[in-house]
Length: 146
Image (cartoon, rainbow, N blue to C red; front, side, top):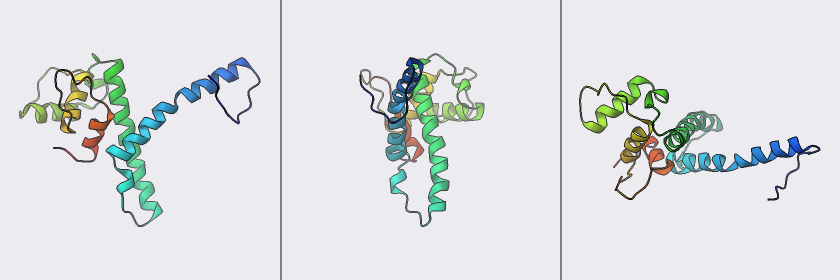
């Protein structure tokens, strides 16, 4: 693999560091995809750069959280969602999804919670659909629930 770069590299450790940086490029591409398709940042019709900067600051946090949750659902599926969302948020999600007024005392897993979030964004959760990704979780951030 050849990586073209303008950064100086004199030692093998420096080369390895640059390769690690490059390996993060895909995560950055996915973050931009969530910003564009989920948060729909390109659709913003703001009149000043200052307003765009403010909304972009919020949307970047939202996109990062979506990316982190989807990654956690793949890498740590049995982790409790309480490690990722505050209690009020995961309990509200449980109540909404199960149409209950009182949340279950059982903390769902990250995998379950991300699946529920994705279903709110249009993920069908059919038997052979595989795990949801950032596309459907990001759709929820734009309030484009079905």
